[in-house]
Amino acid sequence: MRIAAYCRVSTKSDDQLESLRNQKEFFEQYASQNHHNLVRIYADEGISGKSLKKREQLQRLLFDAAKGEFEAVVVKDISRLARNTVDFLQSIRLLKSYGVNTIFINVNMESMGDSEFILTIFSAMAQEELRSLSSRIKFGVKQAMKRGSVMTLPYGYIRTSNTTLEVNEQEAAVVRQIFDLYVNHGYGQQRIANELNQQGARTQFNHLWYSSGVSYILQNPIYAGVYVNHIGEVQDFMSGKYQLLPESEHYYHTRPEWAIITKELYDQAQQCRL
Image 1 (cartoon, rainbow, N blue to C red):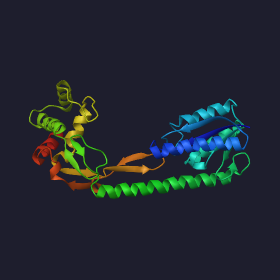
Image 2: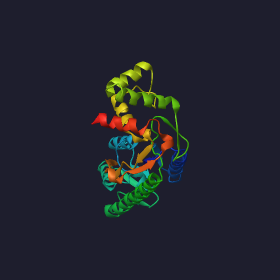
Image 3: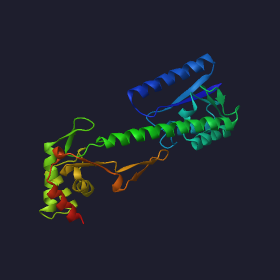
Image 4: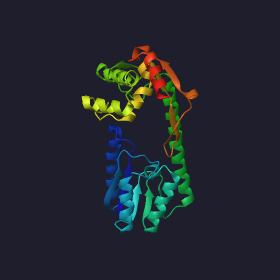
């Protein structure tokens, strides 16, 4: 029988990529032991199973299935195909419409022979496992934020640990210039960005300055020694929708050693923004 195989790993870490290599070897052995002709292995690297979006290899598999290039698709377990029950059912139904069977090796089940209801239960279990994992990660991140962990490195600093930063003096000079031009010289945000670009200053990622980047600097209290996190969080683990939180839920950490400007200058900048 002509078969194709599909495998996926959710990150591009070394451990996950090693897992992908192991999955590919597994399918080659499976085909050999069962006397199948393995037409192709489709593998998505660093892709979440929450959605079919961006899973180019799975989309290619469905396209090739429509052309009749193989008779069956083998997947090691249900969660590798999809952790979203709706996407899972859509995929196996589409393959069935092409006359292609989907075989899930670890549970010894297949789309042509087994009840779709049973397959749906297994898929729902995979989705619930993802929801539980997402909840645990969300809780861990929240606890880390309470301790003052810095999730995203702000411009003007060097990270020395998860909760400790040091001032980057070269970038700090740009921060001071931004506040000075804005408060003491009346420059607008775009004019400040233009001035920095003319001077050859670049952002944290070596990009040109824009008004949005200047705005971020001007409204971030970390430059006056107050680090604020837990500003927003992912509300829906399936869609990844991010939502800003009310100020009452923000965590404030006083870190005077991180101050690049005075609190008075920062407060003046906020008044100018009104």
